[in-house]
Each structure stands twice: as structure tokens, then as C-alpha cells.
Length: 426
Image 1: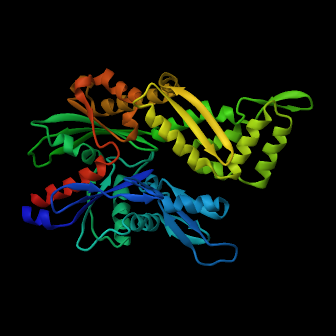
Image 2: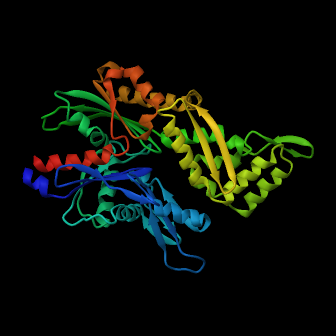
């Protein structure tokens, strides 16, 4: 059976809410993550987005793109294209069956299948064995986990990938780590994505017929994107007029706060590029105390720079994970923003988010019916696990010696491939 495991092509697919990752198990037994081209660069993650467009008024052919190409297509023409994000969130929601995209009906499974085909484009799929990740509990207040997995399997079949093996994402995230355990252990795995943070308490019993038992799982809609928005809200938005005033009939009025709501998600800023909205902001700028800032906002919207801004902010957040301060520099299309951010400031801004993360861990412990000192090990994965204040949250509660991490962006996909290898070898 070990020969079969070595000869069978294996791929682990972490289809995420915000990003997706593919890991390939080579003939040498090593796992390598698939790299995706973005301009002159290559990255490990593929944005979990789809974009549809028709090519103009009267056009009948519906076109689509996924990942980085979808973002480019959307930025080219946001008003006449349809950007679809967070597909995974709806898998277990029985109320969501299909949607209309430019007058063409799509089931959720069909849209996920389109995405999966693009994700694996260029990958040799002949005779391939796929291990797909799934959450212990799917998203949603009334999530039907059986429906979520069934839809996920159907999407892989529609993508022409046949039957797939399925494994829990938190088990995969800590797979390399838990393989080092020499006895039974209760492990808390924190998986921090772009849009959500998920916490799973798992009981590992090496050598048992059922080596992994899920004790509890919780999640919260706070993760990397939320932290990015805190920086934008505190640093960038004030430089674009937030908190300033303008005059109506000689009376000072605050600049409308809704102008900055679009910064919560980068693509929402594109939706503000309507003649009515731009005209309104320009009208406010005429009597504003700081007109230049509002004109910068108009230019940011007109030039479709929301995505570039978020990339800049995300890089600053990453720098703050290993430095006491970082400089945010954004210089595009005549828009210049520069500010020094102290890590202490950033940690104060995300304090409300940290409280919610802590509360989600509390709920997991309550569900499992165990105290914090009954947790033997803690494994953190995902980009937000790099943030010192996040790691400190777990070290203070569980003890530094019990907290570890690794493969922060690719651990789930790599673990899925290794799970597939070991299942074939059994």
C-alpha cells in the first residue's frame, strides 16, 4: 500500500472564504504549494473570488474569471461586472440555492466549480486524488453541515474532478504538528483567515481507530481584513477628509461618514464611482475646511485604487508583526499618503477585535466543557497568527510553552495532502 501512496498523484485543496491554496504531494514524498502568477510575482494564495461580465451593452456571451484575473476584470469595469466573494460562506445555507448573473441562473455548486477549475488550471489532473478541506462547522447561524459537505463534493464533481476525499481543515492545519505527539492530547487550533477566525478543540489519540475527535468549534467574522480596516480607518480616512467639516448655510457640518464606509472592503470603494456620488463629494469639497483631502478621496475613487491601497496597508500590518513601527507610504496617480504607525497604536486600535477573538475561544472551551488548563497544546495558523498581540492573547491564557505555529498561509493545504498520503498507506 505504501507503493500506491507513493505513485498516486495527490493534491490538497484548501478552498477558503477569502483565499485558497493548493498543495501537491510529489513522488519524492515532499509537499509543495502551487504558485500563482500575479504580474511579475508568484504567490502561494489564490483569491477566492469570481467576476462575471458580458463585454458591453447587447453582448450575449457571459465571460468570467477567477482569482487575480477576476480582480483585474472587476477593476476594469466595476459597474458592469459582478464580483462574487465568500462563496464558501453559503455552502451550508439551505436558503441559498441559485442566483442570477446577468440574467443567467447559476447554482452555488456551479459557481464553486467554475472557481475550482480556474484554481487548478495548468495542474496535471490525470489520475489525481484530491483531498478537500471542510470546516468542522460550516458558517451560518443555522448551518446544515451535511448539506455543506454534499454541495462541496458536488462542486468538485461539476468541475470534472470526480469523487474527492474530505478532511477537517483544523485537523489538516495542525497535521504536521500533531504527528509529533507521542500520546493522547487535547489541542486547540486557531485558524486565522482573511475574513474569519475559527477555533477548534480536537482530541488526538495516535494509533486509535478514530484518531481525531472534534470536541468543539467556534468562529468569528474578525481576522486579517478587519485589522487592515482598523489601519485605514485610523490613518488613511482622516487624510482623506474623515472627521473634517464643511459648511451648509454658514454652519459647520461633519463630512458624511458614509463616504468612508466603502473602505470596509476594497471592492465597495469601486461602487462609489458613480457620477452622483462623485458630484456630491466634489460639492462638499467646495465649502470644506480641508478641500484638498476630499479631492484626494475623489481621485482615489476615480482611479480605482482601493485594491492597491489595501495591499499597501496589509504590507504595513505585516511589518508591524516584527517591528515596533512602520511607515505607510501610498503614492499612486498623484495621491500621496504617508504616516508612521507605532505597533502600540495598532494594538490599541484592534483591542475590540482581540476581545471578540478571546470570547470565541471562551465559547469553544464552554462547548467542550473543559477549562483552559485542560488544553495540552495550542497551534496557530493563518496570517493573523503573526500579529504579536494575537499570539500574546493565547500565551497569556495557555502559557507560552503550550503555544506553537507554522506554515501560517499554507498549513491547511499541505496537511490535506499529507492526510491523503497517510490514508492511502493504511
